Image (cartoon, rainbow, N blue to C red; front, side, top):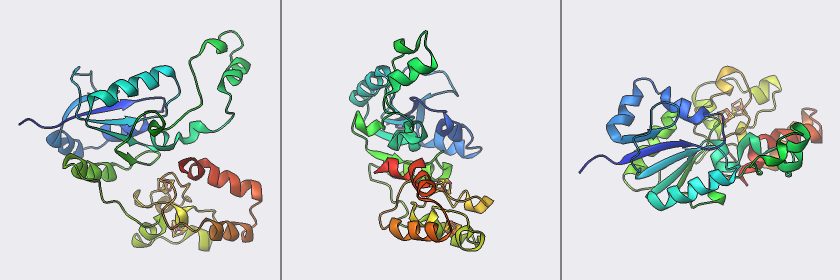
Length: 243
Ligand code: SF4
Ligand code: SF4
């Protein structure tokens, strides 16, 4: 029996998640060992073969995106949403709901003709077997999940917050000692505390973790002097999209 076939596809996005895959370095050999890659957008021409498992990045913004997903769903055994845009709509799902009038304002000549709708996550159009969040995804997390998915079982992922990973790395807490509005206490782990390890507060791109105490963090932000509007913007960037 041959290896399972995997395809990596992009909807409306910056292609950041697929680029993370192409940046796997030596680990890309592990990927090619585990699966036959039949489509890897931006990195190789498509083989034209249908995959068994499809990884889809990006948000759904057009009828073409919808049609593509519906056709793909019929062909594959599993669809995995990769990256925050595919999981929640992501940062592009900010701004006005009415994209048509917005486009006409920006492009008076041609805006009305664009096939663009409010960005939606993949799960709003087709059933999704698993979601791998991140803006962009974390390479190691992807390979970890892939191992489980190829065995037909749901991946075991950390059930704690980014703070736990941050502590494991021995980082100084930005919230406590530098007065930074870090969202690590309410965000799902999996990125290895990517931003706090570089001295930047977490923005919450992995989504809320199950026991997140949002109210308590909001209270801390208020005590730090953040306005209600600033607090709302922090949570709206990523976290409130995944609800
Ligand atoms: S820096 Fe952020 S993620 Fe790290 S422990 Fe502090 S609050 Fe948590
Ligand atoms: S630190 Fe926060 S914003 Fe940065 S990658 Fe991790 S979850 Fe996403």
